[in-house]
Length: 290
Image (cartoon, rainbow, N blue to C red):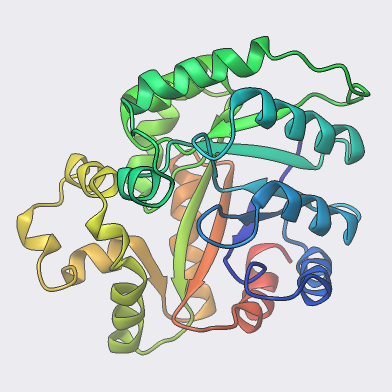
C-alpha cells in the first residue's frame, strides 16, 4: 500500500453532509494527496464514513486516525476491516487506538484498561476472529496510534506501523528506531496557515486545549522533554511551535519535511484555526505533493 508522502487529517468530513463530504474527498484526491485520515470521536462512524468516502473517490487511501478499540469488539472490527478491504483493494488503512479514559469511561461507559495490554489482547482477538465473507484480494492493513515506546514496540510486532499524533520530529526519529526500517510511520502534524505568529500560536492553543487535558498526550510530551512550565497558560510558545507548523508555504513545507528526515514515510496535515481547511490544502498541495 502506497499512501504517499503527504495526506490530510481532518474533522471536516464529519461536519459536512455526505454529498458534500464526498465532493471534498474527490478534490483532495485531485490535489494529489495520498491519504485522507478521519477520526472517531463524537461524529460519524469512521468505518461507515470510510466506505462512503471511498465510494466517492477512485485512488486515494482512506485511513482511520483512529478507530477506538472500545467502540466495537474485535470480531466486529475485523468484519468491517475485511469488508472494506475487499470492496476497495489497497485503499483502506485501519488505524486503531485505545482512545482516552475520559472518552472511554465518561462517554462510553466502559472500563479503561492498561493501554498496551488491552491493545495486545484486542489485536490477538482480531487475528483469531472468524470471518466467512468474501475474502479481500489485497492484504488487510492496520496501524496503531502509538505514542510511547511500549505501544510503538507492539505495533512493530503486531501491525503494519504507527500513526503518532501531536508529536515532534524528535519523536518520529525515536519511533522509527523502535519499529525498524520496514514499518509504516504516518505522523499527524497541525498546520496554522498564516504568517502571523500571534494568530498561529492562538490557533494552536485553541486546537491543543483539549489534548493538553489528556494524560496520554501530556505524558508523551514530557517524555520528549517538555516540563511543567510548558503546560501552563494554555501551553508555552515552545510547545506550540513544536506541535504546530505555520508561516509561508515554504516554511510550513520545510517544517513538515523534518518528519520525513527523521524517518516518517507519511505526514498528514491537520489545518487548525479555520473552519474550512480546503483553502490551505489547495495552497499547500504544490509544495507538498506537486
